[in-house]
Length: 323
Image 1: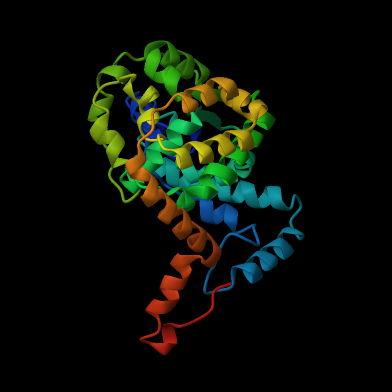
Image 2 (image 1 turned 180 degrees about the vertical axis):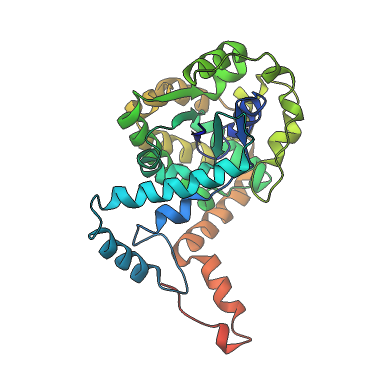
């Protein structure tokens, strides 16, 4: 019987690499990034969604319906899990034991995903948060400061991931991206044994041939990782190399805290020492100052929503409120 295998992580944490490696195994099927569970679970929330139909009213009506169900919220989660499994089954071949759903924004709903799939398997993939930050800047910002766009991942997402892992550590597997790069075979043996599978040497030999088509996913990972390398482990130091970036990162590490970093498998003092030892590149400083100001405006005024509203000015019928 097909079981869900959910890979939880922040964006830029190596999830595409691990997904491609695991998908080589004949017992594992996958697809780029489904995102399918997010709207199903956000339907339960009053906040976090802006919609033409009034999401708050919709959520209120749904919670009214849940009160009439024998198990309330759990009945809804089980019904949505059944719908999800139907899709996973149709996306898989008959020999698969697992469908691997890798959608980084599932970090925001990790607790409910685990409640949905009580018999599923769950992998929490961690990466040095400083490396995650640097990768976001380089991959999506072309080296320019852009973290204001990903605050939901770096703060809400990480907090939810850590809390959910702590609550479910007995039935979940914790994997460090750095360990996967430094000792790949040993780490993959541990992963497949956790899943009740046998290790397949082809996983490391042919993962570069795995390509998932779709609108979402990480094309940079597919392009850059033809074979495993430890180069990304310290690559972040070349990006977090001006005073403003270091200051922001020190505050971020302080916010995460020693205990939560330890849950992820990292040492606060070690990360801080590595950050303080980075060189200084002054050429990126003026642009960062400007983009910090842009980030404040972006977060205060929800620029993307305003942009959609402005697009409706040419046609009064398209100019509407969202709730």
